[in-house]
Image 1: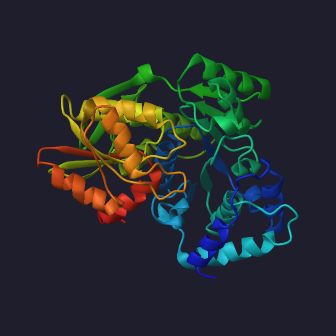
Image 2: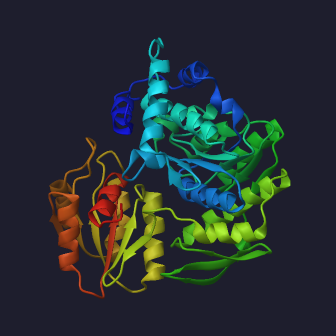
Length: 422
């Protein structure tokens, strides 16, 4: 079986309409030898920032000389991106071979495994085969009922910034969502929590107290920014550093603080990670499509933010990086997102919009989106594809303009491909 054949078979197993729970994942993993029981983890959940935090932690651990698995979702362009060891995606041969084993093992299950459950099993087998010392494991959705939560107690359980998203599945208050995400906490782990609302912090701290789990809360006041610009950001945290990250946006500094607290927790648990490894790892960390500056003259930023909280962070980052400037946006959104609130964050900055239809059956059409933006007082031009949208927005831009592509992860991978980045 080739990797592409495996991907096509896995994608046939949609989760829509399936009962939430861990029983399918446990049964599937048991059929392939319970590889998840033989690995150690940093388990990361949250609404925003979990991917960036995971990438920074994984980069630091690799610089410390460890063999590090990184499991993330969704991918931007290639399905293989979801399974990485020391920054290298799984090979097509390995994906095909391991996925074939998983798919065959799942045949005959009374309640067949879903797409994400199959992917989780593939990841566990791959990371075990690769001899990973630690796996940085990003939750797909929620925490308590996510298929990644079949793992034993991780070394560190991490909860990043929480916002209102997937409310149908997780609840319609921050406290309810925090309760679901606190489901990754298990006795025997350490916990790190991104500093945020008191409502969320109380839920998490209460869960840790009940289970006897030591909890570290990040300290935004301990973050000192020494320099910030289009080449990256330099900072100290508490009494640690000087550090540099290439990731743009002030919110990435707070994610870096979370990553530093994860590293500190690992060191307390006996993992050997030097400050030099931390410095090198943060500097080397990349996380595409999050305030990613991909070209100059005109400057073009790609950002996969797809909820109001992300769009607010994007707006603030653009204002800091390009003060008093108007931005040309290329955007596409999904119809089931709160796109009025999302676009409300961008409208005050806009010089104009180019709209496209993301590749999803949930997409709002480019024409409908352009009409909505015009009614909101903006100039908007619909385009028939991502590549046409990029050509159009660059034709509209002057060399000293700023272009931002944002709104849906479904289109960012296509945009990167159209720009020759993948």
